[in-house]
Length: 427
Image 1 (spheres, helix red, strand yellow):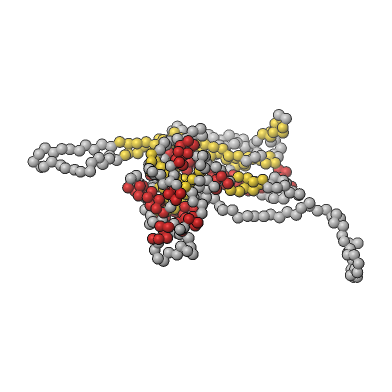
Image 2: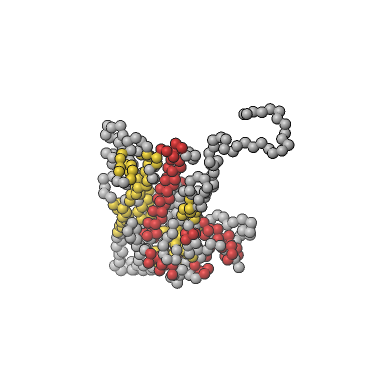
């Protein structure tokens, strides 16, 4: 009976309903969310941009006038009663070149069935956001890698000759001036133990070289990111992994020379370093293994199979070779070392619906993630067909990008030995 009233409380065995009496799902599912450290860009909005001029080739050449050098330290003109000597002042110009790069991003093909029957909805929205995130990280990686490769000098913490000239030039997909062999050579020069750390005293030493040897001017503001204008005016910028800044809390020199009101026992170090070094922390800093390679920051970890549900279970976790890398690269910068290139729209013949048809695949190369259904379907065994029934969708994005040096010696890459537990090194 579906309902019974006034039934006496049983004195023997409890009545039990048949657990198989009704239809049910094999497992109850609930949406879960977790908090992950968000990604923030440190390179895309750092530099001023140059707008690409269409129909001017595929190589940008920047030209700038170079002032004449100061070639003497003393000046002794003749007496006015004698024939005067003269100084002839002439100047030259220099140029920088850059090639426009392009890259494509795609998702797998999505069938309508998962969105129709699977528990987790809005899967395409998550996939689109994730693809956009990958594009943003790739842009930062491109800019940072080109800057490292195009820098004519580097600083190696604790080396016999820390400030040194190195090979430099444009990095391509097949070769780089600073290859694996060069990286191994650089690592071998890092000072042993504490001498190889990028601590407070090393930061001040780098600033001294930047200011007095390189003649690096401080930042006058950040044109591409007005929100940082007041922060960086008159300062140098040190960009690198967060632990470099965190270690200042336990830095012996900082502890011994801090102003009395600063409480580093109950709070972390904060503010500008030594008056004019602004620190910018990266979400995924450039870390290097002892063999001169650069491990990926994250990997997918396959989880154990479940009794119920899908066994395609993976968790994105930090990559052990990355978090345990022995060396890291930071970047000490003055003003206007590089400029990024704003490519602009494609040629108008390819950029819009200039053909009077219902659908026209316009060329878009500004990094926008688009959803398309104009794809081929592979049914296996050599059988392909068009997506004429609209069962499949795909996410795509076409990216063009470029960077050109302005005065590349105004950015000094810094190689250091990583200090993962600075609080344990305090004596």
